[in-house]
Image (cartoon, rainbow over all chains, first blue to last red; front, side, top):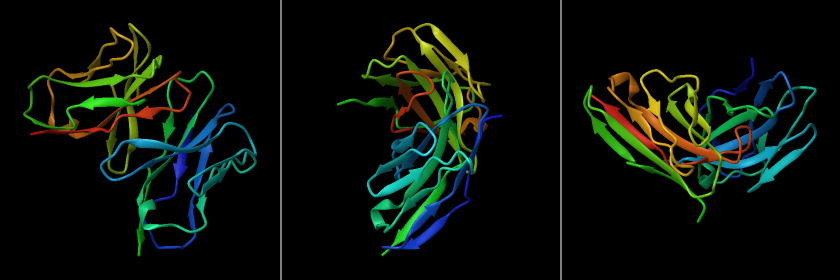
Length: 112
Length: 112
């Protein structure tokens, strides 16, 4: 079935460190891929998305590239800040589907 | 401001006492959905609605009811809550099921 697997957390980094959160997917069709972020005490917000192979989504210094050959959509940021501390969710959807499939989330803590 | 609102934000109740969590969106979205978030399990879909008077079960519908009498509202009803329904609940909406979803701020429910 369709699913998303993302790296286990928690992840703790120092400020200005490089961030990678791995996400791989299994899908029967051609999914759209998303990264959502959940800040403490808040709901999920869309961070970035990509709708077809080789697309790169970017926002707030975060990037992710839709890699069909490796079925991956890894989230990266070159220099994290304390304000990036949050839980990050990878998700996919299929055209005409009734929902999004979410990964289990990765908690990121950035220390000064 | 485009948003999804949920009420209440926090609720502590006792086993068996019926409760309703309200959800409303002001974006004229066709699709609405309820999720629960539990540690280590990510987000799991409870029910969704493709349009007014059209609802369907998600992955974990047992113990929950929903209704969609108006486009903007999608209440979640727990007829007889049990402690295993203690969780963080999110309502979400989008233009259609596979599209990016907009989330409410969450309702933290504790059933004792």
